[in-house]
Length: 328
Image (cartoon, rainbow, N blue to C red):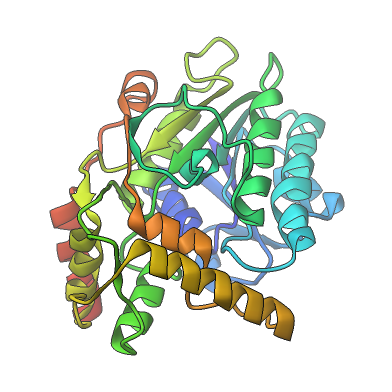
């Protein structure tokens, strides 16, 4: 098939592209930046802002499927920037699919859109989106998911995937931040560190996206639905963090801070950063404190049933690959 990947220069987008190319698909990518390495792999690249509807016209033309992976991540920054990148861009992607007769759209969502500050233990897709999202990122990603799923119909089959804590070699978000904070001594375990968390290795997340694209059709079981995607291996938070840090050769975490103290610190730092007009994200926020102190693991039986999803890379094997990547 001919596929367009938005955000193909990113971590997950790049993994999806590699798997598509490996099986012989024709791939295009559109991103804000220029990525010569994609062209070297045989990808047709486009550069543009997805919030500009015209930027998608040439890129989407003639495609069978669009993987809408691009988004503004993070928990800090002006709401309007998140709205532009995560909502308006999604509206434009859907419109481009319809304009150019693209029949399938796979939207990358976030499992945290259902998070309201409490433990999420084995929940499935029946749990509703949180009525009061804790950050602009979550609010706009929830809006994007609603738009994508509402667009499902006879002319355009859509599905949304919610991969949780994507990690692995080449990560530009989670792993580098953990290593930087641990190396500087600024990272602590919040609470007991024994709350269970189910992350997902990047190749597994990419595999799930391609499985969804292959099965999408107007009458498919996955059409118009959202799916949690994880490694289906809940680990204690401390083991996940220290496993990544050990693989990177960074200091492991032993010191702990009470959950209430971390939340209070996050509130103080948010106030200070907003007052001073700082653009960079504070080292702790209330949302991050809640995430680190609560359980996050999900029932992925729906993805297994409707998508045929089976994680191919275990947590242990993923950590071995990450360690090898750092050694290289």
